[in-house]
Amino acid sequence: MRALTNILVTGGAGFIGCNFIHTLLEKKSDFSGRIINLDALTYAGNPANLKDIEDRFGGSRYFFERGDICDRSFVESLFKRYDIDTVVHFAAESHVDRSILGPEAFIKTNVMGTFTLLDRARNAWQNASGAMRQDVLFHHISTDEVYGSLGDTGYFTENTPYDPRSPYSASKAASDHLVTAYYHTYGLPITLSNCSNNYGPYQFPEKLIPLMILNMLEGKPLPVYGDGKNIRDWVYVEDHNNAVWTIMQKGRAGEKYNIGGENEWENIKLLNVLIAIVSKQAELNPDKVRAAITFVKDRPGHDRRYAIDCSKIKRELDWKRTVNFDEGLSKTTAWYLSHQEWVDSIRSGSYQNWIALNYGAR
Ligand code: NAD
Ligand code: TYD
Image (cartoon, rainbow, N blue to C red):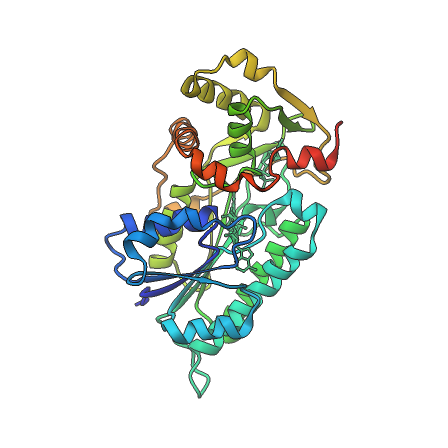
């Protein structure tokens, strides 16, 4: 039986991690433990994402610790101080375009940081005679991008060989291999999930959906890479996090699970759906918004299609999605429209058309 009592969440101030903390503390009646959020607060981490959690649970069930997952002695001290029995590892450099322009931070955080966490978990959970506790868990959050790029047909399954194409996906692939190596070599109880593209509240507006929503609201160009026909599979962030919690409770140690939306969209088609939703909610003229679509130079090595087969988690753990795409995009748009203060709090960064500016015009 897993303890799931003192959970170290890494990267909890970022997009998926902060949604996970909200879900666990506000909605999961089967969780009564504590969350320790370890986050370095890079450009992608925002303490404002958890202000209400801090107000409600701070000092009793929620603890924020600013620090780097590569900092071995600090990580070790957290295991001791909070008697950590579970790790959910979200912290990462997460944006493909940034990895193309500056890969080093990805290798450091995603590879060395994951190694440091695994090694300190092993150190904390192994007794003097070398026996590993079995009531503990290290759950690693990964991506479908480790599997590479698909043609017009086919799906990624848990057995698809890894074939990463960007520094981001290569660093995530390396971290996945370290996680499974710690299971096989040291018996560290691990689970691993590979999810498709997430969207929802609190996503940093360098990723497609929030970038487009904010640019529409601000009358800015809508930069579409290449021919706009690359395909992604989109899942609402809360559905992803429900899957993560399900795996943590019921997933078999040593196993990996694919998570997906079974919801494939060409970027340009998705953008047209989003234009209709944003225009309606913000009372904009959709033709005028559409006229802002700007085809820009393609991302180097741009993966053509991702599509996830998530039948294993549905079949074995009885996970189901609850939010369809229309509903999820509407909720997401409404969230950005009603969180101007949040948008302002990160506006100091130069996220607007960051990539278009860096790659230059086509
Ligand atoms: P994000 O970029 O929004 O947040 C990352 C968080 O990690 C930030 O709070 C940042 O401050 C923190 N962080 C970065 N480096 C750190 C370090 N060295 N030490 C401590 N904290 C550090 O990322 P996200 O979109 O929330 O993604 C979370 C995880 O989910 C990542 O592992 C990512 O690979 C994976 N994932 C993301 C998606 C997606 O669509 N966003 C899809 C599948 C998997
Ligand atoms: P992104 O949100 O960066 O996620 P990922 O690269 O991890 O899938 O991009 C999603 C898709 O949208 C991808 O095919 C690249 C494309 N894209 C654009 O066309 N324009 C943009 O401004 C961005 C950020 C992405």
